[in-house]
Length: 236
Figure (cartoon, helix red, strand yellow):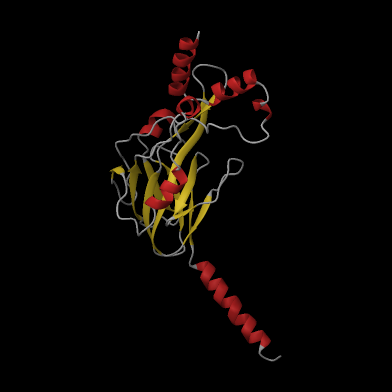
């Protein structure tokens, strides 16, 4: 009985010290975590994961720009996505890191940014940050290709996990820029990306053909809409 208190205190001290050494990276709402050190980050379309806990050492994080923007063809909105990019960062303490666009808190030109992401990672205590950004060339196939040609899109999450795995020998990338507090720049093959080819289970918009077409039209990007219109005209 007399050992209970010292043991509890020791365990409390251990877990407190373990928690204290973890750093944290915060991303804006318009970005999403894909993978960390070879493992997919558990996220879903209904909630946004803003913070990611990081242990000391070199960490590799796959992130993607993903935002909803006003549509050029209608009063609705559509998605814009970049290809995943890999942040390699050296964590040396329980710091609070923040990722943001290089030109401010918000992305001013979403489509241009998706093609050429420029980022800054800083620390809340204004300390130096040792990091670099690597832009991948991973793409998701378009909705039209999936629907009419039977193509399967790449598993972006799995590819991102592989790219952040330290045991991976090679990563298909297009550039390897930068270091602390300097905006990352990369020639990019990123493009406005369509939403998944299959509507979510239970989605009421999928109950009637006309509603489903309207649903996908509002979700599709400009390139996908052009593909669809070209296909539809040939069917007349």
